[in-house]
Image (tube, rainbow, N blue to C red; front, side, top):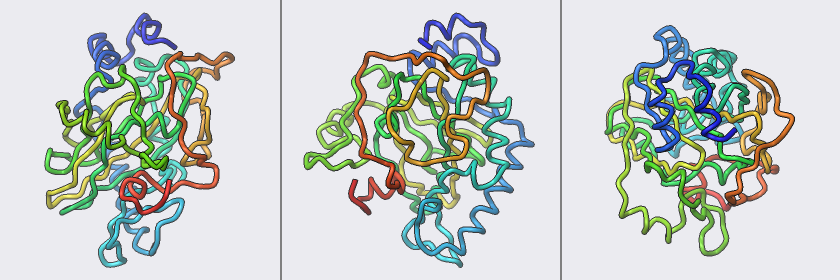
Length: 296
């Protein structure tokens, strides 16, 4: 659906001004949005995930480990597809808490794309460099968005999400380097451009949501605090957004309709989108790509 068509549908949970802000600026921060009962359930489940990671000694398709990870001192960078790992995550991802909100931003027919649970451990949890999501998983249109859930309070020194307002309506950046290798971030020429721009930083208390469009330039700094920062991320799209390439992080819920009905026609946005490498043989994470732990 086009933004103007979505805005013509009466809002379900957001103010009309919030919807207009999202489409104009490409992001939203909704503080204290998720009920406390859900946050407690997600915290308990995430504590179990961290405990499970103690028995993992190398990164694989499920676990992405930070250098220095050990049984005694776990430093998990990412749990891939948490919705597949524990049913609590999928119950939340497909709940009315998020579906009502999504209706206001992608329309009445909504499908799930993928999920990840990112961690920034205390005292140095890794940065995520400036990038755009849609080049990782291009679609026929640009309705896909990511909802991030802060499970604990996230202050500015913990590495919250940063965005470049309105960048979602500009040309997409190249995420290959000069040698033609996929690096999962804006290439050096683009980095020079970004140095002249001002970012919006999105900290928030536990239960807050960050929402950013798939074209949005975004990043996060290292966690310099004494408190870790897990961030649960779920990606959705309008049902009429069809993927061009295999999903980097497969899930049993891939393309599941969480509200409404499947599309019979694809909506095509005329703006071009860069195509990533072939992910069908496997994918690790944006961390290992950006830290040059593997070749893209």
